Each structure stands twice: as C-alpha cells, then as structure tokens.
Image (cartoon, rainbow over all chains, first blue to last red; front, side, top):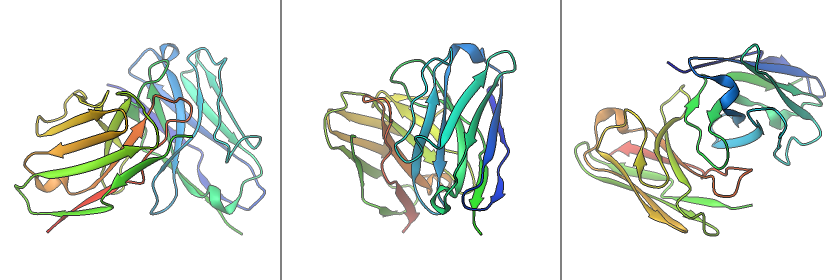
Length: 119
Length: 108
C-alpha cells in the first residue's frame, strides 16, 4: 500500500523558514516523480513544486520561485521542501503527491501538513 | 499557463439522481485531464485520468468524458458519500498541472 506521510508544518512568522518532509513507502520511490501541492484555507489546489525521479529536474510555481527549494533522498525515500522568506499568503495545507514521469496525474497523496504564517 | 474553469461552483442534487460537472480549459489539453474528489479534512483522491479512465478502486458510477477543451464528470446515481468537492486538473502542459477552482456537490 502506498503511503505518503508529511511532517514539519507549524506556525512561523512572516519572513521565517520551515522545512517540510514527506516519507514514502509501499512503492519504488526512485521510479516516481514527486510534487508538493498546497491548499489555502477554504480555497482550491495549487501546485507548488515538483522533482523528477532522479532529482535533476525541479520546477517551481512562479509564486514560490526563489524562496522554496525541493529535494529528495532516494536512499531514504523522502522528499523535502525548504521554505524561506515565508509570507502570510503561503499559509496552507501542504500535500506531497506522487506521479509517474512526464505529464501524468497525481495518483497518490499524503494527508497534508498545515503551515501557518502569521505574526 | 492554461486556465481551468469548472462549472457550476455549487451543484445541488438529490440523492439517487445524476450529477454532471463541467471543466473547460483555456486551450487544448488533449485528453490529459484528471478529476479528483476531496472529502472534508482529507487529501484529494484521483477518480479519473486521461479524461475517461477510472482510477483503481473507483466505482463505476463515476465516468469522465471529453477531449480538447471541454470535459465532463458524471456521477450516475449519487450516494451520500459523493456530496463533496471535485477538482479537475490538466497535465498536458507540465509544469504546472493547473487545477480548476472546484465544484461542490451538495444535497438538494
């Protein structure tokens, strides 16, 4: 059974940093691309960043480019999102999601971790 | 960036009836269109991909159709657990895989 478990969310002040992690199990992690998708309270879904299976391709949404960094460790089956210069509008539940290589949908999602940016 | 527009924002339907949800893309996405279901407090779940293929374990009452810019999710006979929010997503133009704003199916 595929499992994706996010951690690292919490309350942080504007301008602060936070590092999210997602632990994967139940599939061959190194064969799949991973992404982070967020959902602001009461709002829709927004793709944030992705990373290819080998880690060489790391696209970002314009809204987070230059502030967020995605990485993965295929030896530990984890994907991380380093979030710097956080803003109030980064407040959201952050989901990690799995997909096959190339243009494919997200076939599995974690339960999400809440990030609240507030003073 | 491709913009996905879902309609209606809220759909009021009686249990046992059919629900038809629409999703329109600002430009052609071929058949690279997915539908997700999201229950309150839960992560989205993949229902349909490639416009019309049901994901593993999805009941047959869920069906998808369309190609290009116009897509439809049909729930043939609404069950109580189906009254939640549905999102479409295009993944033809990747990244980003843009989502629609969602349609909430509520009990009439």
